[in-house]
Length: 159
Image (tube, rainbow, N blue to C red; front, side, top):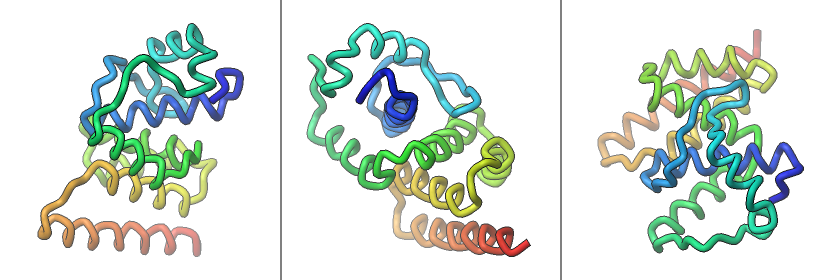
């Protein structure tokens, strides 16, 4: 990670925000900005510790379950700046601003109109997958909802 590269800073901000929603507390407050959730306190820290940031080093360590969360998050999003930006923005709207999921999706589509519908659907689905630990009944309901979102995304691309 290089603090001089916008994409790296964006990735770090969104990863930390999504991990916070998963229950890993870093103590960074986030607010919604144009490119999604952002913590100026976290930004100050990675600028102050640019060498450690570039080597992904810290004096802190993650528990095994926290390390599993990081692994799952990086696997789902593959450190894609666009997917992380979209997914984190959607989850900020739902979790922090308490928008209903359908409204949050519409808000994200409006805010992130420079991204394709396919990218938006993919990022929202991955964010939901990362943060939701469903029962069997909830998994079935989620699958039906995700299929509807995918169909809606495909229909909108046809117009």
